[in-house]
Length: 600
Image (cartoon, rainbow, N blue to C red):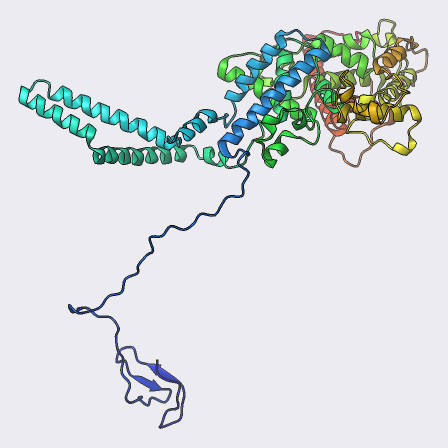
């Protein structure tokens, strides 16, 4: 570029270069003299032209020493070790449930089979890492692509040799001898074997790319982390649930949650219960994955359990039996709602009308009876926990009998089943006593869902809390004096016996409650089922009546769900029952039957 100097004619400092002529002129057009443009590009170089080249040092750089702990496992080996810890944890959980619930020893066999099916149905199953690691220690290649390419190269070379033998079998002896020499040369030529291996690696890489193109989720699933959402410790509890359903054990999800929160079954902080030869290889991410902070919720356990039941039936044809509904319904009637056999029978009858699916997944239930062409094969949103469906059905029965809206309802006929149910005020008083009895249980009082104000506790409750902490933090005490830590250093002489909530519940429910009286001549009193109110569960500004709210809170706490979720299930069943009732009335009007005086 021209120097930034003044033009000798006009004194301008603004210069520009003409592209076509290459002349430099000022802003006024005066051409700069004694200026030439040179090009540094040479087309023809002579023999004596000197070239520069870069010399690279052949010295290898010194590798930095790794500061990683060699005892910790990473990658696929860490995943396999993680599943080993889960399997050992499952065995401890199975042994605990067999001792707590007096289950038969066949329960362990069922859990083992379901665990195997569960691992096979994972999106990313556990790898066979110990075999690959052993091959690495011996010095062989363990890359899956390399192993596949080697096998393909061997098969390709073997097939080419067999074809050569077949083609040359009918030739003369000299041809056969030359072919055998060629074959021996092929076997001994390392360059040809290397070319065949590289060719097979290229083909295998192209095949892998095409498979990845057809399965885009495979790589992304493997890069998410150590574990996925279906292979966490909560899946162990789901395996136990499916095993209990398979053996027709009448359990609910809150049974597992209670033994987890009371630290009777290993789930919270289970790494301390594993042997040292397993925990020494765990990284901090693996320890975090094995140590959940809270017990799983009811809805999470149902989602995982229903997935396992659905997948093992679709893949292997293993059908999970239906819920053992009779004992579970009696637990709902007696333990949850404090009801009588009359409430049990009414709930069972209404559940038959609502066609409740008593399976882990709604797809495993039989299809509905279709009367019309437009009738559905199954009800929508039926994939709810079965005990929650039974509780919601019982609440609908209570609303039909009592209303639970502040208005008095009395039966007018002695054959009405509402006559055998207790009076509303006595029944609500029983529910309040049941809530107080549950709070005296150590498993509920010291659980993670309840805030314990230490300053307001009495001496007996503090002693029970210390016993609970001893069992949770120290574990079971052996007879050996060396392992009795608290007794040696912090001995407590006064130990109160734990209060059994089942005894309190049976004592409260054993007393006879007065039955509902018949309606006399009072015309302003409603009958059971009259003026039925359906509350919208999405009305965030609305408020439930006091009686209905007491029943909902008691049921939601017993099943382990929120009040809003339970109200949504109750509303769903109420609207389904209203549709069934309107269809029944329409059918009676079409047939001309007058059944207005009959009450079901």
